[in-house]
Image (tube, rainbow, N blue to C red):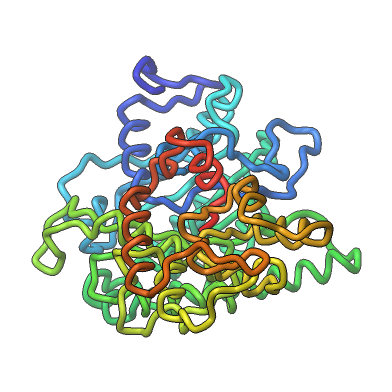
Length: 436
């Protein structure tokens, strides 16, 4: 998109192609930028972040690409070992002004390149200075340029909380990346960050949003305060934490911080350091964490049911299958009588299909043929269910394991080609609704 641009010129403010390239390339390592919508309506300006947000087009791994994803600066004073923009990294540096970012956003929006903005920054000079520049950028976009599109803003740890709270009035979503799953790893690999400096702003934003919601309900406040909530991100494989520890942290964030999403970024050795592993963490581990995360959010599972703190998720089976194989005494369940909570735990029956089954069985006794029409993944589900007393699964646990492993291999559990979006109609549906 940027190849033909020598510079962007709008109202006498310009950003060179070199600066644009540096700042967009430096932003590509942050995966927590997808939009899940906002209730910000267009009130006379340009753009719209309402309801569907910016999810119009996606990269092959499922991320929204209709956002302009850019850093305000990659000139960092921190020296996080894993970061390509760290202080001692030999990379080109650039810093944009708030006006340059604003003009760029408006120009790209008018050219129909983007619907919104994902704005982050390295810590330039000091946290307060950086957060002030980020705040000024989003405030100008809203008040001077009248941009009503979706804005995701990355918060700066250790910046003044008043700056953070003011920014939340203009951004649709904010995120503070946890980066590493434990305090010990942060001290080792990112010594200028701490667990408290990352979790405290998340907690404060959560409390402020609760107050804002109550005040707005009483008619005491108008405007917005993070209508699309908060997200965060963890790097997986740069430090030795096990999946059980990572998912316990995830579960706590969902419960205590009302987090919208936790993103997992598989470690890739882009920069070299004696404290970092030389091999990538692998996409399969990232994929399994996302599957387990989905079970926590939509299927009623707890981390304690899936694995212990010192365990990793199975590479052979997806987390729901792995749980079912450990709990064969609960199966098979009768599809025409099982409650929703149990249907959600059957491998091959996703959340949408579980609700479809509840509705359909009010009117007729369901058979395996009916489940096939609903696109239930019977190659998994048949080992754990009966339909009107009939059972077509394998007769013993070893056979079930073998058939499930074969089904897993056939489906090629890789992180995401949009989960083989074009391979079959059934896989296309699974890739869209995420059912397990």
